[in-house]
Length: 236
Length: 297
Image (cartoon, rainbow over the protein chains, first blue to last red):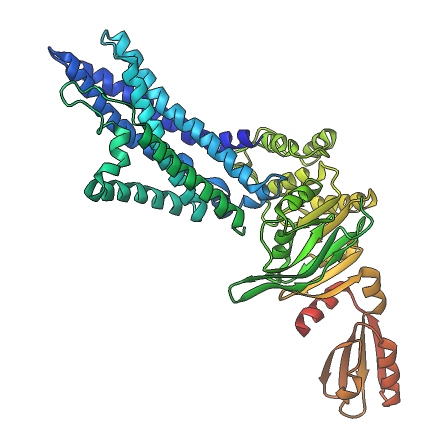
C-alpha cells in the first residue's frame, strides 16, 4: 500500500507533466514537419535533436518536481507522524517513494519519444528506432541524477516550497558552472546528446557512453544513499 | 499481553540545543489501564510520545514500549505493529479519500477489524468518497480515531484525542476508552481536558518542564490530596507546617491555606496544637492538583 500512497501523492504532478511533455513534443514535431523543405533528412534529424533539448529541460523540471515530497515535506504539512507511526522503516518509506519516482521518470522519458516516433512514422518520415533508443537512454541514464539530487535536497530541507526552489537553483548553477569550467564532465551535454551528435547529419553517432552513464548512475546512487542516511538520523 | 509495564522509560531526556524538552523521565505505564498524561503546552508530552514511537531520538536515556527498546529502530518498528496512535494534529493524507485512508491503514496491521471499521464509519457519519482535505476538523479527528479504534492493539496512545470533537463525540470517545481498557487494552493519553481525564483515567502522570511531578493512581490522589484552610488568632507560623506532604502554603493575614499531597492529619494536628481558631479540610479535585502542581514549579 505504500506504492499506492506514493502513486496517489504524485499522480496529479506526474499526469500533468506527462501530458505537457507529450503534447509539447507531438505539437513541436508535427508543426515543424510543415517547415521542412527539400533535403529533409538532416533537417528532420536536427529537428529531433532540438526537440531533445527542449524535452530535457522540461523533463528535468518534471523529475525535480517528482523528487519532492517524502516525510520531510510531510513534516512541513503536518502528516509525517502518520507515516512514521506505521510499522515500516524509514528506509522503506524512502525507497518506495524513489521507486515510484523512477518509474514515473522513465514514463516521462519514454512517452514523448514514443509519440515522436509514431507521428514521424505516420507522416511518412520514419526515424531510426536506434536513434530514439539512444536519446531515451541518454535522457534516463544521465537525467536520473537530477531526480536523485531532488530527493537529496527534499531530505535535507524542510518547507513546502524551499526544497523545490533550492533544487531548481542547483540544476541551474551546476549547468552554468560545468559549462563554463568543467565542460568535459557536463552532464547536461551528455543528456541532451550534444556531445554525441554528428553536426552534418544530426544523428547521434559513436558508441554509447557507458562510462559516463555509469558515473552518472553512481552519483545518483550516492545521493540516494545519503538521502536514506539523512532520513534515518533525522528527528521528526 | 504482557503483565509488566507496557511503557517504561529510564532517565529519558531530549534536548534541542540549550532547551531541554524532557529531562530524566522515569515513566511506567501499567497494562489494561487508562493512564492520563497531563501537562501544560510545551511540558514535553508530545516529545515523550514521539520518542516512544521512534520519531525522535532521545538525547540520553532509554525506554521500552511493549518490551521493545525505543532506541533500536527495528525493535521500535516491531512494537508499532501492536500500538495504535492518534497524533495531536490528527495527521491524515489530504489527497486520499476517507475510504482510501481506511484501506491504506488497514493493510499494515494484522489486528485490523473490518467489521468495526464499517461500524465506526457509519457511526461517525464519515463520507467514504470525500477527500480528507475537504473534511472538517471534527471529521478528521473522527477518522483518525477510527483508524485507531478499528484495530485491536495492545497499547493505544492518544495525543489530545478529544480536540475538535463535539460533546456527543467526546462522550462516545470516553465510553470507547473505558470499553477498550475493559477489553485489556492499555491506554496512554494526553489531554488538557481535566474533567475528561477525571472521568476515565485510572492513573495520572503530570509533566512540567520535562519533569514528571506526579505519578499516581487517581484513587490515591483523591484519597490523600487535601486543601486545609486554617485561621489563627495571630499571623500564621508558616515554618511550622513545612514538612513532608505539604506541597504549598499560602498566607493572607491570619489565614493560611495548605495544599497537601499526604499527611493532612498531621497538618490538622499541628494546627490544633498551635491554637488555630478554624480548621477546614476539603478534598481536592484533579484540576486543583494539576494547577497547584504546575504553579509550585
